[in-house]
Length: 239
Image (cartoon, rainbow, N blue to C red; front, side, top):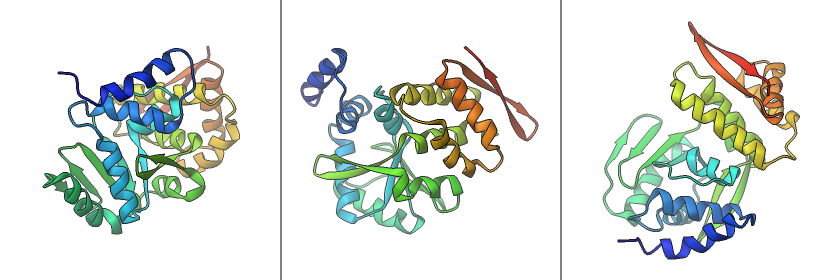
């Protein structure tokens, strides 16, 4: 049986297929339907809870990439950054709206089983703290709430941080590289210097190396990563 939310989303998909440029909110609606086809309005409910509670947050991961690249996809969960102080408050607020939740709680992470969410405290990681700064986020009205998404340069730097992590699997790193390329393609006006400025939070990477990665991608090339002991080496591949 086709979920009822599909009837609201198909016109958006049709407009997108004609080449019309959709808003961030419209891309999020499509992604919400793809991610939770049997449970309409999950992301909208999350937006309302975040807004009602006044929780500072950032939507990252698949939902952010889908909106910023204009290519929504059926991501498996909602990834949120919040401050450590708000983890418990947010989980309680979500339970009040969704009903009892199965949550695995760790010091800086709450993993909700259904609807699937990873709520991560940004406090301890400089890259995440930087991403939460107001100047690196953008508000998106979504239903009766407001979601905050990263700016394109900020999401790219978050992705570079994941790609260059020694714990990132090759498959996940490969998808991250595709995500970065798609965001750049959807934002041709983005300047290399915007990414380099935020990329200083990558600490183990020089501004020159970050610039080379972005310049290579903007020129139609790509890059690969290779794990060398405790370091991840970058190999830029021109077009």
